[in-house]
Image (tube, rainbow, N blue to C red):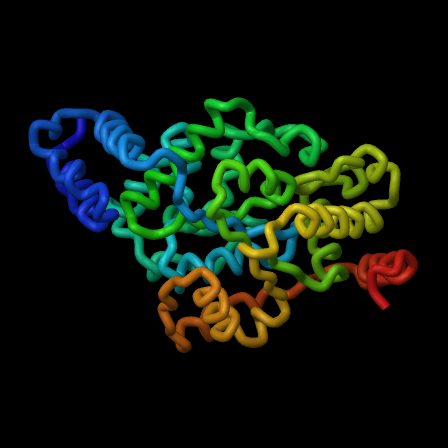
Length: 336
């Protein structure tokens, strides 16, 4: 059963939600103190459905090919823009994303000060660190390679409705949009757009040589880079695996970006270059905040600290790997 302090904290969170739901939320009184969290959430959802006939939340999806600096970018947005995000608590409560979000937001008193711009191959540090939520997305999408084929659509209508409910309720309870970052979503854009017509998308791009080299490094940490596949996979995965590892990682970058460009709604998306983000993060974040119509927690001092932390991480790799990737990119016309 839920403790009364938990309910009071929930009611404080509910106070900031949309005016068209205030009346129903005010009815969540102390008679519900002994009720479960799910019961309260379901009651709010029923009230929403009686008022609204369709999903109207505006989630934000960061899309990028692997190893483009997307985790650092994700952390910066969560830290400096007024958005909601799922934390590493979600990894413990995989089938209770709303509860994990609430715990992070209300009980752990989540704030930008808890977000450290540090990670290890896409995994943010700390319990309050933003998560990719790969396992959570498996509640809604299949986790199977090639992901462009087998993970592109919802498992079922019920899975789609559950994801809609989760994202909508987080926006209702917080008054702000939920942002997520997961490479597998690059092949799910059509499904996500059908579930969330008002979604916004951020396409992060990086120099193909650097991102390919970083992907190759990630593979090597796990074993044989020719056999190991890192992250989401395009439709021709098995053909690609016959290529040398340095060619595989380049084609993974190219095909993932092609999939994004092919499906991303141009009128509700913005493109960001990772190199420009490093050069002037304050400007890029301001541009994104204007695109999303969000407040920007302008703190130049902290941004410099975060940037210095990121720049202290350097790609360490055999020069032959970079040379092989560079030669292949030139051969295929991917760079000049």
